[in-house]
Image (cartoon, rainbow, N blue to C red; front, top):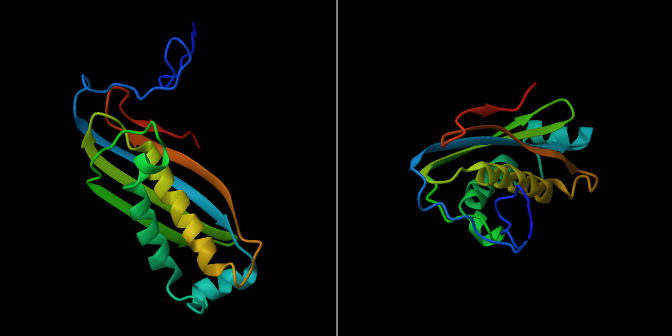
Length: 159
């Protein structure tokens, strides 16, 4: 018998999908960010709009939104939920690109994985679009910033 605090593991240690049938439907929201470190030539091309493959930011945004809707296909223990809103923002900084994704739903389980997946896949799309300029571009972080809704209410990553 396992005494694990992990909800996706049964008492016997087997993987399982958590039963959320009895949980109340509430409005859920999560915001996550991914940081993509880029070289000066990549940043210049992004700022000038001169990347060889076209509109990097549009591709990243659409990729992220699409990814949020596909989480159960990627993560086998994730619940199928209706995504009611997804926004992916892209901000060029001094040393890279900060991508934030906010996902909203009215459901029985949170959308943290959907937001994290949206931000991360948007980062991967950005890398795909600029790797011809610099093969060293990389994702340096991916993390949940905030979540709200459900029994645990509002949570914010400490500064």
